[in-house]
Image (cartoon, rainbow, N blue to C red; front, side, top):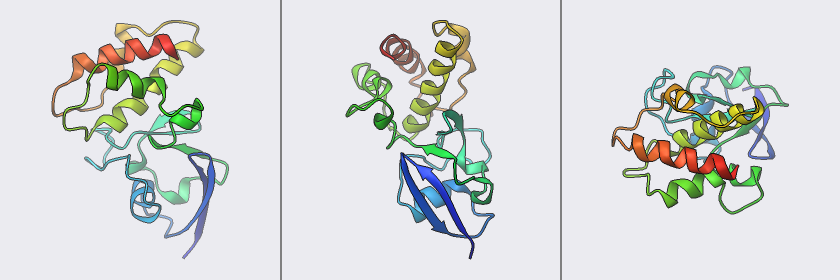
Length: 158
């Protein structure tokens, strides 16, 4: 089988799997990274949302063969390392606002929210309701109001 190398949560990793295996399964089944969840497999629910080179993406829809050795993949497990703290401000806001109920979608929600706040800051502006409306992660428990509150609060600390 071919080897695939990339950077995962700040560490270089190499896996020996077929090119067409979805990155989500490499993360979960081969590397034991359980934060990104399987929900739909077709980029709709976004339970698996993670970052590739700082931008949000859905590893359920990416073949490991399409990942380059220089690609930096960050999952919820590696998010605190991006700020050098035990928790990222977005994770802390989630706790402060008691967002999670079942918690299944929360890693993907947080990763998407971080990317959206970073995008707004890179454009020199604060996060807006229009930005929050663009976040399409599915939460079956319906904690959308608390999610929006947490994102807004965390944006002030990021």
